[in-house]
Image (cartoon, rainbow, N blue to C red; front, side, top):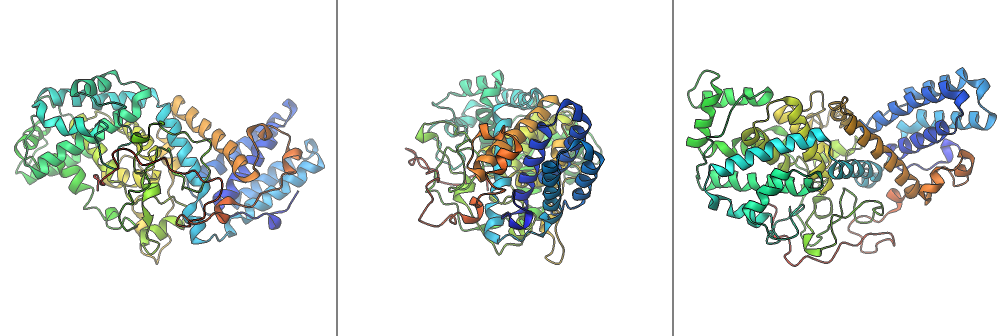
Length: 516
C-alpha cells in the first residue's frame, strides 16, 4: 500500500473521491460488533461528501477526526487497517496542498462526473414534488393558450419538432406535434417525459417573450390569479410603481402585462441580464455548431462516458451542448475564479434558467417558495443533463436574481482578483429538499454511481471489484495514472482510444444559439 507522497492525485476532487471510496469500503467491511465504529465513519464520510459538494479547498480538519475514531476503537482494528487509516488521515491532511494545472482545473473530471450523474438521475427519476411544480406551470400554460389566439404559438410547434434548427433541441419529441398534442404532453405530466416537458416550457416562453418584446404582441392574462410570494411579490411591487401604482394591488399587474407587452420579457431579459453576474460569461469565441451530440452530461470529448446514457439513437435528435461546443476564455475573471474553486465551467451564467424561471413566475405564478425550488430542481436536471451549463451556472443566477437558494454563494465568483472568491456550495441546494425522501435517495444513488465510476476511471476496474476486500483493492495501487491529467486537451487532434466520438451531424444541423 502506497503512502500519500507516492500517490499522484491530479486535483482535490480526485483526492476527496479516493478518500471517500476507501473509507466507505472500510466501513462496509466492518462486522456487526463494530457498529459504533461504522456509525462514526459514516458521519465522517458524509462530512467529506458535503465538502466535495461544496468545493471546499481544505478538509485537513478531518484528519484529526479520523485519527480520533481510530484511537477510540483501537482494540477492534487490526494492524493492516490501522495503517490504512493512518495513510488516509495523511491524505486528508495533505489534500489541500495540491496545485493542479489550469488545464486539469478546467477538465475537472470528477466534479463533471458527479454533476452529470446527479442531473441525469434527477432527469430520469424526478421527485413527485418536482413533477407537481412542473405540472402547475404546465397547467397555467394550457390556460394561457386557451385565452390567446392559436396562431401565436406556431413557432412553438416548430421548435418542439424535428424542424427545430436551434442549438437547444435537447428534449424535442421524436415526431412533429400539433399544438394539441404538445398540450396533452403537458397535461399528462409523465415523469418519463420530463426532458420533453421542460423543452416545451423553454420553447413556449422563448417564443412568447420574443413576440412581446420584438413585435409588441399583446397577450391575454385573464386567467391570472395573482397571489405572489417571495421575490416575485417584491418584484411586482417595484414594477407597479414604475407604472404609477403605489400599492400592493397585485391583481393590477395582470393589466400591466396586457397593456405593456415588453413587461412580459422584463424578468428574463432585463432583471437577469442587467445584474452583475451576466457581465462576464467567460466565453471564448462563438458556439461551435460542428459538434452535435446526444450524449447526456458535462463530460468533455476525451473523458469517460461509458456509464452515462445517451438520450436517443436518432441522429437528428442531437443538439449542440455548450460543454462540447463552447470554449472558455482563460483570461476571464469569471473563469479564473470558478476554476480556482474546482468549479465546472461550461458557458457562464445560464440564460436558459432566466427563461424558465421567468415562465415559472409570470405564467405559472407558483404559490409557494418550496414549489418554486422544486421547479428549479427540474430545471437543473434539464439544463445540466443537456450539457448546456454546470449546476453553479444555474444556481448562481437563481439565487442572485430571484432568491431561490438562500445561503448559496452567488456573485462572489465575480469578486475582484484581490479576494479569494467563495466556492459553489451545492449542498445548500441539496439541503432545500432535506425532508424529501425521494430527493435524498437520488442524492445517495448519485454518490453510489459516482464512486462506482471512480473505480472504473482510476483503477480501470469494474463494479465487481468495488465489492472486493480492501486488501484486494489495494493491489490495484492507490491511483492509476490520472486520466484527467494525462488526457489530450480538447483541441488535440490525436484522441485517446477511450474518446467518445460525437454522432454524425443531424439532418437539420443546429443553426443558432437562441437563449443568449
